[in-house]
Image (tube, rainbow over all chains, first blue to last red; front, side, top):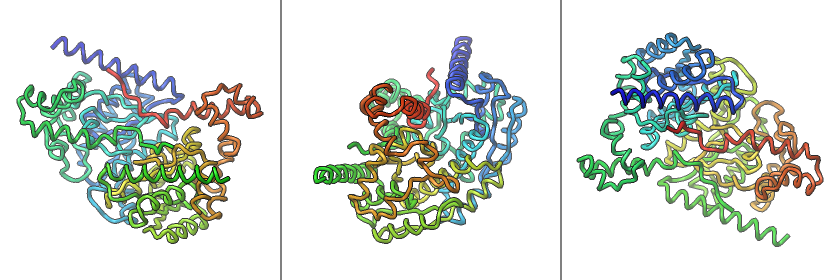
Length: 256
Length: 256
């Protein structure tokens, strides 16, 4: 346990230095981060505050129709207790205005909301000469569980090399309140949307598979044996990784 | 001249094959492209039609406040004459709804409009199981003259390896009407916005500098000598390339 705390301290310092260094090499004055009241964005905000001080961190809380009121309260509470400037911007009138112009579709509207948030983060970044800190974690990135050019779009990705289960440990180390760290993961793209339900795995089951498949480059068969899970489950995870490759890669250009 | 026509034919075929191939390896059914009535988007649409047939190409024409009426007419005319499905969606009520929620700023609003268009392109892509074809050319990309996660965001970039002056030649070869090929370049992010004015170079002057600096990796001094232009001008172009590097690279992640 002492060793784990030491490792978490090392990781925090490393990410904080990354944020400080990027800000000083770009000419930006601070960082803007979207606060959902969930795990990832709370951790990114906390690391940014540790790195830069609260006066250089702006938190935008952007609820839409499917956002539970409790998420907004948790995000506001966290912003206040960390002493950062924050704004609550209800994006549902904006999403509704799009829907007046384009055909209604629940799933497409979920991704649209994620992109509307990105638009507003970049708008405030431009107003303040700030950069946008993204909140994607490694589990989400690897299985493509994010909106391309939505929550996946940012100037820096501080926790993109940490699995969801590691982010949860880091959050406790950083003393993020349990109301947030113990909340079930959800992008809240529609009412009742839960990450683990949509993915079909719990992160506790998924992360060890991803680690072996991606970091250790083990075959599906070896992973199934090592973890004692059915091969079909490992194949399912591998398929998610492969099918979402285009979301992690640079956009392909026609060569001449 | 005959050699130039042959070269343009080769380039067209190469880009058309790229589009066809990407579509068949992804499981998408067609391509959606934003039509501005300008050069780049017209060429991308035409190449997509040549590659896939008009029934697999959807054109979205998305004027905002600063868009001249003539641009809309040119885009509609081109869509009709190519037999593709198209929609005209006035995005100004959407942009205005954002501005009700966030502080007004002309320049930030310009980038916002580019991102709103991206959002709508991806929305229609999701509805139809299409991919988004981006319209960035090499000149714009190299100097960063595009909106990050706006017009720069797409699933494929068919003309991103062609300089603006080459796109213009290709457009004539593809029989895009002169009303479009001879129009002054403009992202139309605000009224009176002209590309060459904002950039501070004409593309005829800029492209040879970019070619020598980037493709031939020549020093600023050599480029100035070769082209007979002041060193300060070459340094200015080089500075644009360097400062926009973050817009072309993958988002930096904190390593652990």
